[in-house]
Length: 516
Image (cartoon, rainbow, N blue to C red):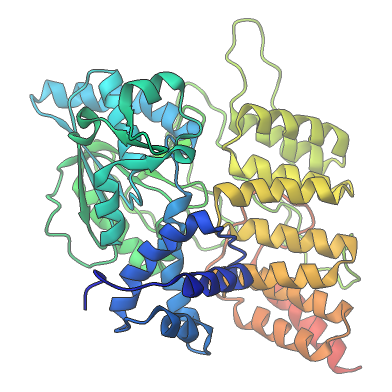
């Protein structure tokens, strides 16, 4: 069955938008219904339906959660933008791109770049603009699971609102207006990009030759895959890249718990992965989920990259009653970065965030707030910084400002689990338990095995005197104590560090309320 010719009426889109808001917290306004239509034309034929109303009814059924999660990555294609993640694009434009173009030139060939999960085309077109500005030859292959999205991207037509953030110079050089409020990318831009449908989760990629690519962008895609699929995708990405080739992932994605042959490198204040020029041994899986992200190879700058995560294992004593969580060995409080002397480079965003975390852990919230505000102002794309800023507001009792900060994070990453968890904590702090329950439920829809989310939901239900709901949540936390760890992006003190610690505390609470 093909998605062509499907009749998708507005009432079905309205019902679907309502369902996505309820389950995942995604707020889709009518001007986003075009993206919903694209998603439905991909998913409805996949499960043998041609009636949009019936599809939405199936999503609301008990067996609909699996399909709803399959739909989510397609729904969020409308959330991309040109030059998304300014810091990554700056690192690519200033450091990575010149290097790979020079390497290709020395071999008398054209540099090849893959935008995997290209959505509606903003990412590959942004890469093409960089190439044209530098007069560098490049071939860009752009793929997406959704054939309708790939076809739409190939047309290169965008409403004016999608060009927000582009400079006037780039708009004038790379777009022409249709006269109807839309813009079309110019032929030189489109000629650099080839769009195709492609399923990254497929076990074989016949279109991809070994060692044929210089760089891969695959941002905000692997968060929808299970661990075995991620391992397979990373193996195929590695084989597709030339030695020295680069791979960029999204902010909320890392390979710290994935056996991989890639090396992680800090470049331009952000992180990227590179296929080593010389082979390296595949590391063993980490024995403990407290293991930090692998560090880049030593360089003249010996400062280690920051791993932003919950750093205190003492339990949520400031938010909820005892008992305290078990205390594994606590990591040292991050030391603030030393001031730079004359002529030394400015602090990187990673180092600046380390200073915010240090101030929080020392209880100096006013200083943490000043540092976090400045960092977010300077690097608005930094999701970890924005989430940490929201948490500082929570700790200071400024809940309206906290929610505004988390809302800004969700505007950039609509499926950000951490923002939902932290919004739940904000609701708990304010005693707004119904709001806290809604946000934690949304977090658990996005990540059903999040043991911390189940534990916090249990505490919310306890305070609501819903003891049966609390017991159910605590049992789920115990059930998922062996699940793969989700290292929270952003920093909040007094959060447990491991699923095992969460499970032990849930057992204690379950025993306590069972005696009442």
